[in-house]
Length: 96
Image 1 (tube, rainbow, N blue to C red):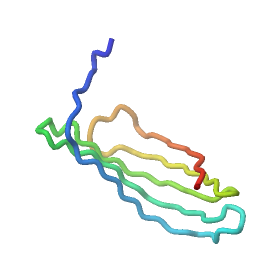
Image 2: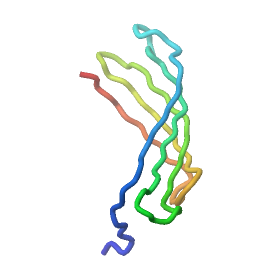
Image 3: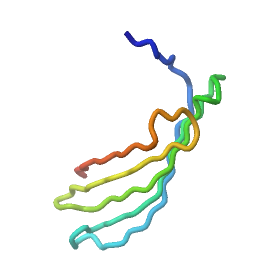
Image 4: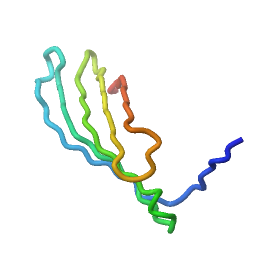
């Protein structure tokens, strides 16, 4: 059934983000952070360079209440296979 099976490989995966806090913690949309992030995967086992991936995008995070946070991120692939033009991730995070 899976004709596009990809053999597992050894790779270097990395992420880097830089952002800025705009609001204090105890206000509506507290701990508001706007950031830019990048993600990459570089194969280390001699596979083709076509498997290398690099994407960048903007994101935001803010405090809702009682240690719950809202996160949102858009990523645009720049290098590597492009099965999509962008991806969007949204999460509700609980800090323990």
